Amino acid sequence: MKSWIALFFSLVVLPLSLSAASEEKIENMAVNPGFEEPANAEAGIMPDQWITFTSKGIYIGLDREFKRSGEQSLKITTQHLVDGYQGVSQKLPVVAGEKYTFSAFIMNDKRDPLGGTGHCQLVIEWQNDMGKEIGRKYSPVYDSSISKLRWDSAFIRNEQAPVGATLAIFGIHLSEGKKGGKGSVLVDDVLIQRQ
Image 1 (cartoon, helix red, strand yellow):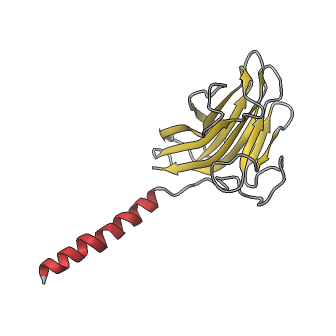
Image 2 (cartoon, helix red, strand yellow; image 1 turned 90 degrees about the horizontal axis):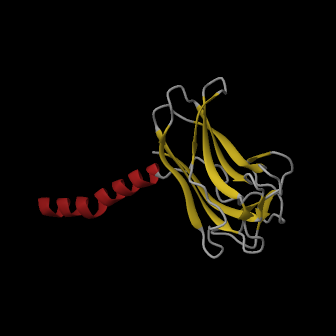
Image 3 (tube, helix red, strand yellow; image 1 turned 45 degrees about the horizontal axis):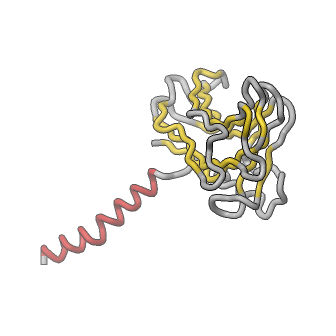
């Protein structure tokens, strides 16, 4: 009888508890991470729950032709400005000392390929309870060499929130660099995760 109980525990109970623990760890803090809202949007409509920022004009919107999952992705197009920049972000509460991962899938838009000194980056801006920036972390630079055929992962992994951090701005930036950029980048399936 004891062997049957042990077998039941090892085959049913243990895997279920491990599965629940795994699901708990992968909770996505990002809101509208797949850019699916508003649903059935026309090209160029802004995604819900994301805040835009820009040095001049806004060339950001949803794209229904290319997506990694779901029905839509985000398209960010250069402004053709030297040192121009724009992007989207979400401001979320964080816990100082805890580690966070911020990732997204990106692809060079083959209809309008990224070029010049244009590049995409993920950025975490740590803020204190007064909203003052107390630190910043950048992902590697993703430039015109990113694939036009497959989605690649951009990421900042296991970054520790500094002492005093209570908020973080998780941003997806398209910067045009010293010579100016051209083209567009596509973004989908954002993950913001507390470790």
